[in-house]
Image 1 (tube, rainbow, N blue to C red):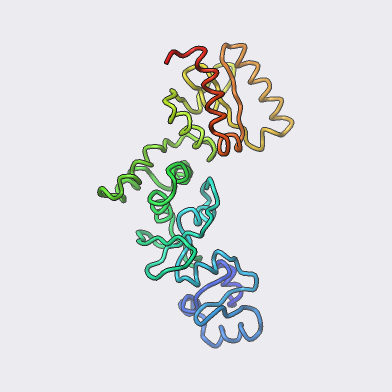
Image 2: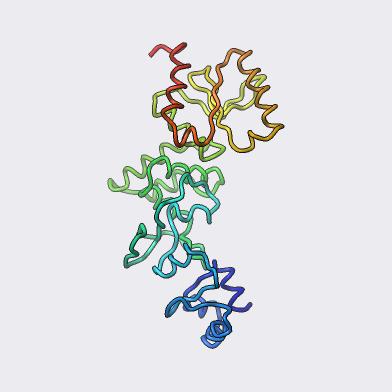
Length: 273
């Protein structure tokens, strides 16, 4: 393997110490730089031309992507792309970035990405509760963590808020937006059941107060076959005595009050509060 191929494997940027540890000699590294195959960003850091900006920022800060910034590289849901990079750094500062301290597991070596457990713990301590719950729920559904495992690594009063976020996770969602919708309904004191099988209808995303079906539509619901299926399910639901509301991503994330107002408009007709 040559230096260029290794850098592609490592995420496009690396410290020269990492390359030396991988078995490359200083002469080979200098030769690759001289040939234009790689660039020297500063003393001790080299990269491929066009290297990923987030990886470059992490390595130059002597850190690794973590929290929400690490989510895509672990294949887990992320509700929002963070406005600033989140880095795990053992020491020092990185202007314009969110710095996290403390690591419990090995990183995604050789890529500059913190391990999944570290990324989740940092998210639980850092992000808004719903954003953190989305990341944890995704990892939980993939069988890559457990609530008890995370809870045990959040000891003491200072981690009380982070442990409270774990109470929002139940492992029933099919998508990040369903986590948001579930927490939205529950925050209103609405009796919320998720992924409920109804005879003659099938599995619905939410059943509120036992009679209002709420479906959260993703991009697949725009496909012709799915539209026909959804129409049939809607008709079957209403004929069976259920009320039905449908919402998309932007409704739930960017206009939640409208969603809640409409849900309560239906519920108040049959639920005494």
